[in-house]
Image 1: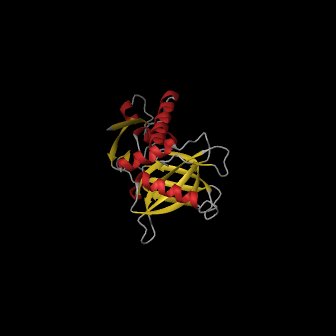
Image 2: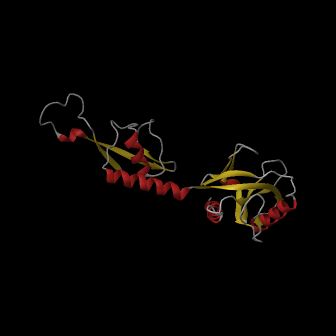
Image 3: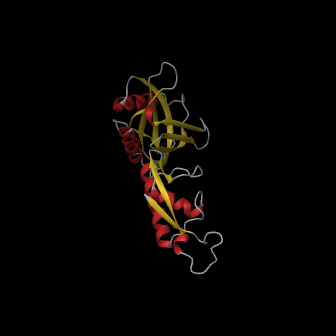
Length: 226
C-alpha cells in the first residue's frame, strides 16, 4: 500500500516560482506484518493495529514524516470513529465484585464454575474478603485491578492460560453487600502455584447497569479464537 503526503512547506531552497509541484508531494510505503501496520523504513515508527489508527496518530505527531498529516474535519472524525470502533471490538471493561479463587484440579467448563460458586457460598462466613475490581478483557487476556487495593494491585491472566468463562449454571445470586440479586460467574485459568492444575476465579455483578453477560461472552469468544 502506498500513501502520499503533501508537505506544508516546500523542500529547502524551493522559493523559485514555477517549480514542479510534484516536489511538494512525497510518497511513503506502508508495510503490514503480524505486528500491525507502520510507515516503512524508519526505526522511529511504531506499529499500529489498523490503518485508521496510523493515520490518526500522524495527525498528532509527525514521527518519521516531514510534517504532521492534515485532515479535514470530516476525515478526522471518520478516522477517530474507525479507531474507536476497532479498539472497542477488541476489548471491554467493567467493574465486578471479586469473591474467591477455588482450585478445581483438572475440572474446567461449567462444572468448574458450579463447584467454585458452591464452595464460595460454603465459605461465605468470613474466610475470604470480597473486593471491587475493574476487569479488562483483550486478545492478550484478562487484567484485574483492585480498585481499593484490598487484596492486590493488579493481576493479569494471559489468554493462553484461560480455558473457560461462564455464568453459574445454577443461576445463584450474591446478595451480600448489594441491594440487588447479583448474578455470579467465573473464569478458569491454569494455576501458577506448583501442583495446582486449574483455578476458578469467582465474581458477582457490582452494578446492575454493568451485567456480566457481555464480558463472560467476550472472554469465552477470546478463548475460542486463541
